[in-house]
Length: 184
Image (cartoon, rainbow, N blue to C red; front, top):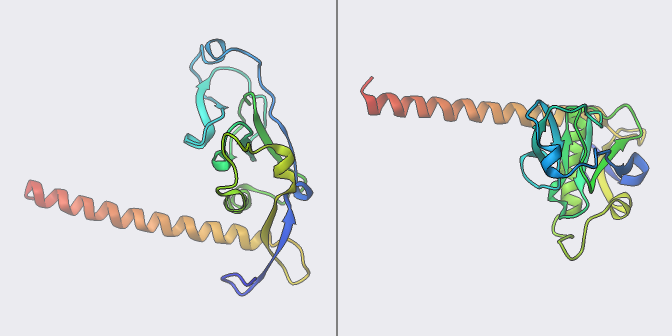
């Protein structure tokens, strides 16, 4: 399949690119885990707020720059975790085998991972690490057949710039509308 840049993509099995295993957790009850307020995110079984259930004052159990998902819900809980965090029961970590996976390439991976799992799972048909390892995703490749990390990084950068541009335009329109209302 051709990409926007005229390049080519190929299917890869997720289990060939990433190790998937449970994140480490403290094994505490929610009352004990969430007793303190702090700055360390706890990644829980949620498809909202990047999976962050709360921030606590405990040592992280996992390094950031990985992808996580919950094996108790749908595949909508797939998120990139930029910061060190604390795992939670049933939260799986997706650990890259290669150091070529960086923030923007992992954000690209999250998008294709979500697309490959969309509407395939629910509370009766659970998404789990065994299934996740077998899922095929399409990634861009270079002329020599290797994953094109540069393309993925540049693609995400371009999307981020477009979003920022749209936000600036929206903000300027809001400011102008407010000025007209208050008569400035």
